[in-house]
Amino acid sequence: MTTQPPDPSTQPPDHYFTARPASDGELRHVPVRLAGRDVEIVTAGGIFSPDGIDKGTRVLLDEVPPPPGSGTFLDLGCGWGPLALTMALRSPAAVVHAVDVNERALDLCRRNAQALGATGVVATTPDGVDPGTSFDLIWSNPPIRVGKAVLHELMTTWLPRLTPGGTAYLVVQKNLGSDSLQAWLTRTLPDRMGPVEVSRSASSKGFRVLRVQRPGANP
Image 1 (cartoon, rainbow, N blue to C red):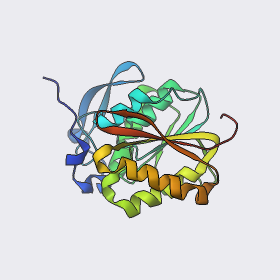
Image 2: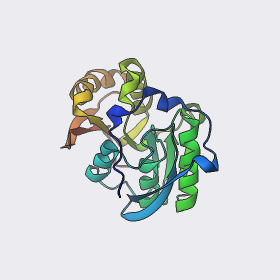
Image 3: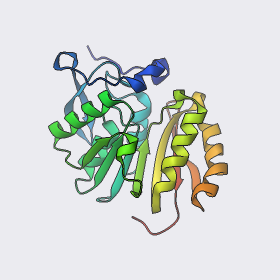
Image 4: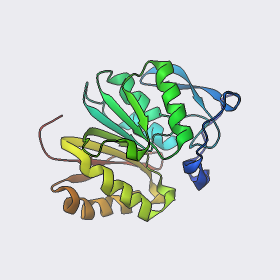
């Protein structure tokens, strides 16, 4: 019997902060489809969506264009790694920073990257990324339920690090404030990063995919 991934809205907020890496006995081996391939990844309790790819992440993966062949990419709030792994598998020449505050999730992301040969993935806490690093592409299913203050800080910390011509794609559930986030980004980002275009690039299954584009040469 196939287990359906849980709805993110049902997940407890403390899943972002479970620090202890999972023991081998806690690992779950889960079949998923990433980058057009059927693969097996490991997850564990105490992280976001331990039963597979959640609905929002799947919408993002289905709706965004393929990543560039190379560059420096960011998966903000990586969890066990579906976005980072997809970027790395589709663009083996890229460096993909997989960022999360959850050490257990980072450990799982590293395990999955190693198992799948995704050598470009660098899984780290936010302070492990060099402050001078900028990104050609950002994919994120941001942790909406941490609250507006934390979410807005995440957005204003990381989105201004897009390179000229760089693009960010954010997936947000419609009933959890996707439209208000789009309006806030449109008002706020120009003061932080200069000219920027914020738009809705897709809408599917109750989720919006927001696109943040920094003008400039294509990466």
